[in-house]
Structures are given as structure tokens and as C-alpha cells.
Image (cartoon, rainbow, N blue to C red; front, side, top):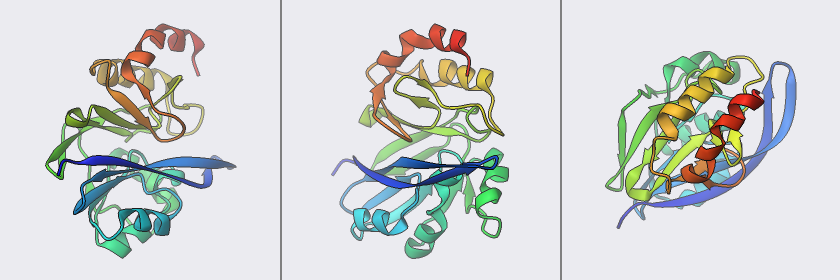
Length: 209
């Protein structure tokens, strides 16, 4: 059976630079009836476990290390034995949330994760966070963008560890070069497509952050 994509929304808070905000996060599960990976273990490990339904969890992939995307990762890892994977450039952010527990392995640009016979390619897309990554699955016609690209523009860059020109470069060079029909599955909110977002690049440049 080919891999499929399942979607779960969990709720909690995002905290950085002294501020706290209520947020809803997208959790993506990619796999088949036997095995799966989780993209961003946000807020509620028990809800994610229930959605997995006893399947073998092969990895917990972190698109970046803001607390709302990783807060449930250690609990989920402990419950399933799955490794937590993070780009090393985001380790300083990770330590703000989990100072006593490090990720199990690094993500690297160009790395391929295979689940249920389907390849997910890691794209390092810094800007929203130094170690932000996207996962491109050409066989599924989709890219998981975390908080790098949303329906309507780039992720926020107004807080620590972020940089607006860098996120624009990441989107221009790593995402807008993907096929226009590629579905963009985001860290928050609705999905979009590369083709729907690409025409707005000049607007984003002018708008700044």
C-alpha cells in the first residue's frame, strides 16, 4: 500500500521572547497501515498516538524547534521508541523547551527519509528559524513546509533566531522551484500550492516582515 497523508490539528501555546500566544498546529502523519512518520509533534502526544492507531512510528521529524512544534516530541518518542530528528542549527531553540533531552539524530539538507516506500527529501530552508526544514515528497505531490511558507506568504520573522531576507531566499530557491501543482502543507492553517503562492513573491519582498 502506498503512503498516504493524514492530518491532525492540536492546540496549545507558542512562547518566545517573553510572549505567549494560543495557537493551533497542523500535525502531519505520512505512512501506510503498518508504519508512519510524524511531521511536527505539537502539543498533544496522546492525540497523535491515537491517530497512529498502533502503527510503527519510524521517526518524529521536526520542521523547526519552536516550542509549539516540538513540545510533545519527547513524550511521543518515549511512548513509541521513535527517534526525534532535527536540523542541528535549531539546537539552541530546542534547548529553550527541552534543556535536558536532546534530539536523537540530525536532519541534513538533501537527506532522504523513506516511509512506506515513499521518499521524503529534506530541504534546509532557514529564515523562520536557523534550522528550519521542509520535506518534499514528489510521489505524493506535496511539500511539508512547517512555518516557512503559508497560504499567503512567508512565515513570521519578527522574533529571535529569524531573518526575513533569509526566508525569502529559502522560498525563492528551494520551494518556488518545485512543480506549481505541488500541495503546500503548512504548520498552521490551510494548505495551498506552489503555483498559487509563486506570483506573490515580489509583493512579499516589498512588504517586508
